[in-house]
Structure formats: C-alpha cells, structure tokens
Length: 536
Image (cartoon, rainbow, N blue to C red; front, side):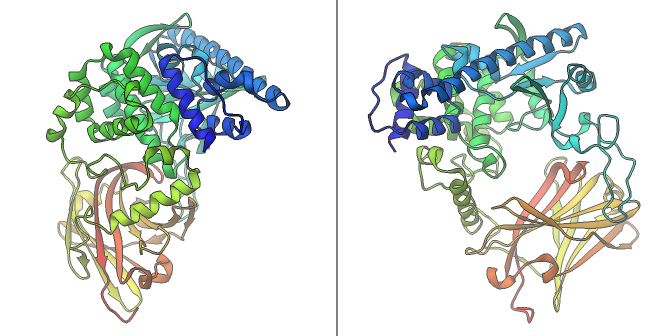
C-alpha cells in the first residue's frame, strides 16, 4: 500500500501548495503511475516524483507527460476554433468542466487531466453544431444516435417482429442527453461531447436549472460561457456522486481527481458561492443527500485542515426535501462496509461485485418497504405514475402449471398511447446466493399490434441476451383494455428454487424516445410470492 499512501500525500501537499516530498526507496514506480492514471492525477504525481524516477523508465513516463501537455494545448486550440465558428453562427455554447476547472482551480492548467471537451448546447442549435463539427472533420462516434441508417440526424430501427425497417426518425432534440464527436489530429484524438444535460443530471429540464445563471469567463485567452460558481459546485458534487456510486456498472468509477476538484473549489472559490441558491437548487434537484454523502467522503479522504467546512445552510433544507427512494438516508445506494479510501483504490471488478452483493442485501432488508408485504398471485394491484400523476392501471400475476401469466388492465386512452409509452416488467432473480440477473419485458405498440420483447441481462458481465418477440393477447372492453402475456419459467430463465418461491419485480411506465431507451415516468417495486405450487 506504499504507492496509495504516497499518492494521498502528494495530493494533500498539492492542496497545501507544498512542492517537495520525500519518496520511500521501496516505491514501485510502475505501480505508482498506473494508480495515478486510474485516479486521473498522473500529471500531478509525475511532477512531484520526476527527479526520483529510475533512469530505465524515466523516458517512458516523461514522454507520456509531455504528450499530455501537447494534447492539452491541442484541446485548447480546438476549443478556440469551435467557439469562434459557433460565435459567427450565433450559436451559444456553455463550456463545462475540462479547461474551465483547469484554469480556475489548478496551479498549472496542465495539472488537471481530462479526456474530452463538454459543450452544453440548446436543442434548437444541435443540427447547426453537427454541421460545424462535420465541416471541421469530426465524426459522430458515440451515443444512441450512431446507430442511424439515414442521412439525417437520427436513427431508423428494425421491428423485431417483422424485421422490416420502420420510417420513424428520432432526433437528438427529443432523446439522448449527449452525443460525442471525435477527430484525429496527428497522434492526438480530440473528443467533443455535445450535451443538453450530463450523466449526473441527464434530464434536460432539470439541467436547465443550472443554466439559468451562466457567466462569462476568460480561459487561455478565450472568452467562454460557463456555469456560474454556485452551479459549478453543485454539478461537481453530483458528478462525483455519479462516478462514485451510479456508474459502477457502466463505464466509470470513483477517482481522486473528482474529489480533488471539489476540495480545491471549496478552498479557492467559496466566497463566490451563493449558499442560499446552492441549497435551493440542490433541494429542487433532490441532490442534498448525495451532496452530504460526497462531503462525508471528502472528510474521510483528506485531513481536516485541508477541508473548508460547508456552511450549515446546506443542511437547513434536508428535513424539507421530498423523499428520494433512490438512496439510503446516508445518500449512498448501498451500505458499504469499507471506507471510501478502500474503495477508491480497489480494483473495479472487485468493487463492482461487492456493490451488487450489497444491493441484493438491500433488497432483502428493511429498506425495501414491500419486502415483508409481498404481492400475491391472483391479486390485482394498482399502479400510478409518479411524474405526471395522470396514468394509472392495474396488474396481476398468475400461474397455471408451468405457465407464468402477467395481466394488465389499462384505460383505453393509455392503451392508445402505447406507441410512445412503454410498459416495462422487470424480474430480478435475487436469491441471496445467486448472481443478479434482470429479465426485462418491454410491452409496446408496433404496427398496430402490441408486442413484448424479452431480454436477459447479467449485471456482473453486462451481457444481454434477447428472446424472440411475442404478440400480446388483447381483449377490448367498453372503457378498458386487457393485456395478457404468458411465459414458461424456462423462457424467463427463472429458477424459483433459488429464491424460495419469491421474485423481486418492478412495474414501470416509460416514455419511449428511442428503441429500448426512454425516461421512466413511474415505477413500482415489490416482491412476488409464487407460493408452494407443483411447478416447484
């Protein structure tokens, strides 16, 4: 653990402006730099230890550092060009993170490593910006939209039931919160993310709260628009939470640079923060618990003297916030037995497995209010969406020998909207000794038929397997429509023996904005008791 301790010492010295450090002779430099890269603080670590690097590997890491400096200058140059052209076309761009934080917080702009440039764009300007980036030789390379098959800014998908292409085109304006464009310039790769939200605050309507008070600032001789200091800090907390907890099963993980950003911001910019506004917006976006959780993590990572106490006004509104069942009272998603320091340096694969074991434990605990009051077979249950509070329906489950039946009773007006709304049934085979596997059933309208797509996802591996699409039985009444789906346990790949006859399930209603992608407008989680039937 020598390398981890040295990294923490370097980071704390950096915060305090102490430029020298004593290096233990037993340090493994290759391991040290690997950890520094994982923690996104390689430039800082390199500058502290460069005179101690053994000669046989000095050239390797010096070359990497110089490459980063040139890469940084390249990103700044491209940013200038993009902003210049967008200004000519009167396209407002809000620049966040990246070179903004490098300039505001770090002693040397090169000290903060980042991989891409984040531009917030208003939806009406997206098509104009794509044209600008295309003319600058950028290629769209990431996001749901790169599955397109047309010449426009959208996608065409195939209907699973008929394998025929539909003519529906979905534009960025209505769907994904970001699209990435890339360009190669010699040995350098420049990534530009056009966003209308961020992964930490993906809902554009919510993100607009942060855009209300943007400011102008000059960075590397460029005048840019960015979030004001208060909203920047809110975004930093939210982004760090996303990387610490939510993104464990996606592509990211917690890193020291995220936490260092917050500490430096609190140290250098606290006088610029409107704490009343900070609390009001954080409360409105339901971020208070998450912010408190990240701040508690900061206190475990850094010595007390390196932290500036956040005014108590943050906690003033905690008792008034609406309940947010996505986190525990601590703000975390699970009850971690290990400290944030242990988790920062733990291999991501181990951390991921630990997270899901704990998540299963949470399902089988007091935190699941439905655990001790499970859903029974042949019992009708009501569902009401928690976003608009205008869609309601009922559902029930039944067993007939080895056939598992799911029934819905929908008001006619809701049934007629299943072309852009989607019913979702998720089963979680969550026996305490089994892997977590989701079985997702998407029920939607396709070519005037109601069909169900079934997919199986192993959370540990991210491997998804899709089953053939089936048509749903539909029965029309005067003002209600009954939908019935039937599956065998073999089709669902569920073994009730592993869960003692219980299945965790979730009923959801989703606004569909892309095939298999949308925003939930309601969700209802519970346990289903299958009973001691002969199928077991």
